Image (cartoon, rainbow, N blue to C red; front, side, top):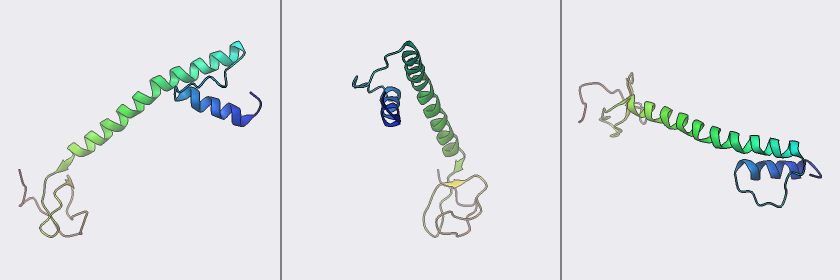
Length: 97
């Protein structure tokens, strides 16, 4: 590697597993670092994607179905007292199935 730009390019290519082969590590240490980057990418990306999905799913399950009489929005937080779209008051008297 001649400069920081080459190193950054190689890192992105290696972590994304594209691997064009135009820049390759020549030393044993470089190969070990490359191997560590690839393995960490393979482990960390699905782990964080699962965390994001789990958070999204939990937030979706914490919503309750109440229809705002003013604007018709039907998904509100469990403790909502006002519509997040129009600001009108909502109540438990109008749940939908």
